[in-house]
Length: 482
Ligand SMILES: Nc1ncnc2c1ncn2[C@@H]1O[C@H](COP(=O)(O)OP(=O)(O)OP(=O)(O)O)[C@@H](O)[C@H]1O
Ligand SMILES: [Mg+2]
Image 1: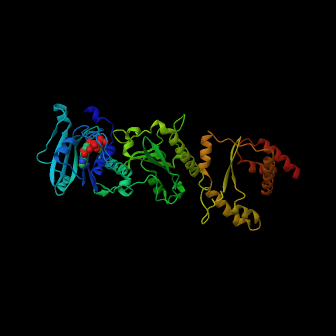
Image 2: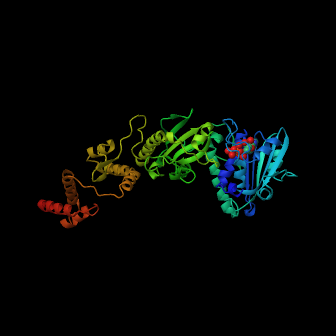
Image 3: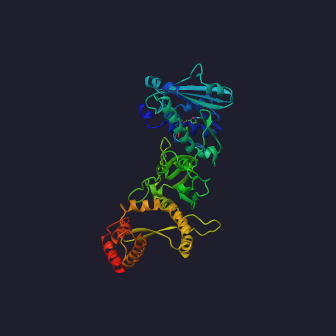
């Protein structure tokens, strides 16, 4: 009993296990009530699914009652015949199940202390437990209520002060909105989930409603006489969200970096919410900042359970060895694309009404000695400014504004962090000669009240690296002019 209780459920995964059962029972609504109750919480879950008659309920309270060996419908989210018991008793010491079918009621209670003394016994409660959900059930034709009483230290919900409890409720709400998003308003059979009277809102990991989410090529993968689809997406750059709050919400529970990678669904219920599944070649991919916009949907039918090693808590899945190469290739492409979107905020946009990508303001030039970032002189706006030396003032300001707004911060950050530092790139002879000419011109434009040495200092003081040799050449050049 103790081992079963310590399987490592969190309150959200435990509640999700009950919702699985309700959805598998064909419900339209699941009502979840989580009551703080002064730090000794009470939880009740109710659904309007098909319910159970007494003999089915007795079977349901057994461990593994209808476990791995039974044939299941493809819409059945269950697998092990354990969830109801293990999830419930991971949180509390007593679970009561009250179910109605054909307008007759059956009820059974499992209690950790009773099981400890007498073995696996479920007790028929008389009278029925007093709870608002039970009274409501009595007026329904069919449905099931599960009550959790006597939460103990095993649960992350017990012993909390009121504020912490309500913060945990937010996590549970977000978790349910994520795990069951396809049931709430996606492509699965509709089910509404209510938490303390308020509907749980769905969270789509792929932000498909966003106009700049980029779906990539969909692949159908065959395996072990069955098949499944893989849909990679590259999500929009931060700049494409209306505001920070929307960007944060799209990131999801735990934030963007934590939520990248594969999203594995089983029967449209989300099992794995962002993981690279140990893929990536010699060294498994980590959750890198640069790949955080990559999210890949894998839609598994329930008949591939065995191969994907679905765990009891329905929060893990591991791809079969034979598929690793294929999945690594798909994910590799998606990560690459995502890195580009992340790095080039000013580049990848499209010119309105044209299939041509807009020209970048900044270009990165890679060479042996490092990477330099240049203003693109060929860009039509910058070229226009250069071509009109006369009314340069306002044009220059406009171009400066453009440049300031497009500094490729992420691109630079990425290059620098991957090169473990920013080297000051060396200039070749030609580039150096040009730079000296330009600096001399600038120095000459400075107020004549400054001495030559002072002017040279002014033009050199912002440049990185060792400027001594530049200073020497420049001094000679200025002297030659004077
Ligand atoms: N809300 C419910 N409505 C109707 N039947 C239910 C409900 N909850 C549980 N049952 C019945 O009880 C059985 C046992 O549930 P349990 O969650 O323990 O196992 P499972 O869903 O079969 O498998 P898993 O361990 O993968 O969850 C279910 O197969 C189902 O027949
Ligand atoms: Mg179950």
